[in-house]
Length: 495
Image (cartoon, rainbow, N blue to C red; front, side, top):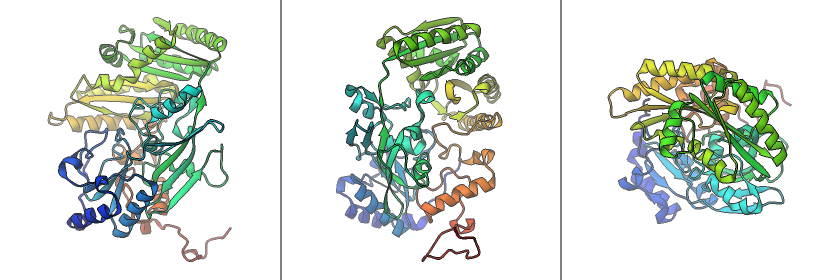
């Protein structure tokens, strides 16, 4: 992937831009020195690096509004960034753009248990929300593997999921309200503390928009009462097919686990060497199934799920008998990305979602693709909802390895769409899958999506170069925009 050539005019104005931003923000909120900028030159997708023009770290919504208003008036691009844990390149900076870091907006503004919600600034970590309410018996359900570090604003931007999204949904299912700042500096509030709002679903539109439509400055999320009982079941299978078929059979039987994760033999070996959670190394595939609710119900569902697993040839089966036991079983799965990082100098983490019935086929064909490219792939799934995370191992210092990893990733993602799936389940499109959007969407689809972008950001200054393989000028798309109370196409019907 080639990064765009920076705008020479903007580069020539760098000193002026830094000076202007320093007048808007406090001195410790503008970073312009090379060493400071190098910290922000990449995110979790370490394959691509680019140093930003300047980094700003505002502390308030008003400061963000002032920065965006200035950049809008000066024609300067802006890239929003949360914790930098994303792995699709969505927060990759631009050499001719301002990187707007949200890490200083890190306060929980309100805990409202009467309405079962928490109001937080975008830099608050995912796990911190649960920590804030757990003593009262509540928790925040979406739990990405990076929940210790990833920010809630970034979770909204990417519509993050996690291990427990099968039963409790991804970010959009747990989001009640947003405060956002548009590229021209306008501050908007969407939703609130209520369950639903009338009118267009702008809250849904902004969730997963990857920083292309606005900058998130406040998030209101739903928190849930902690279940009376939660127990995990560890199952080992002799083949990927038997494990994949078991996933579909459990859900078809009317059992809805809180979580259902699948790991291949390579992932098991890596995590056992790293964490030692007690996973069966002899199994070709492992399932971790968690059920929660009242104790008697959980016990019954565990036994029913165990019987189904045995019908599909499970060679091992075990249950957590305590909370410490349950946490131990999950420790390995949550540490998979770190564990796999020990197997090779570089790891390319993909993200696509496929129908559950296609789990075994995608496992098999992914292995065939990897062999053809001479690379190794370790697989983990949020199996219940078909979210596949193939981890491609390579060495970026070895000539040609990066290109092979990209080609292999493209083949796997094309297969994902071919079998009826989608390009992303939670990581987003960013730059990683940008050039594959045409595999899933027609030109008309992509043009219509870009019209939405133009409605929010007519000059394409907010996180440009992400998501769309070809970014059109808004005028080329025939953008419908009302000016001075008159529509530009008077022959169109009025409602």
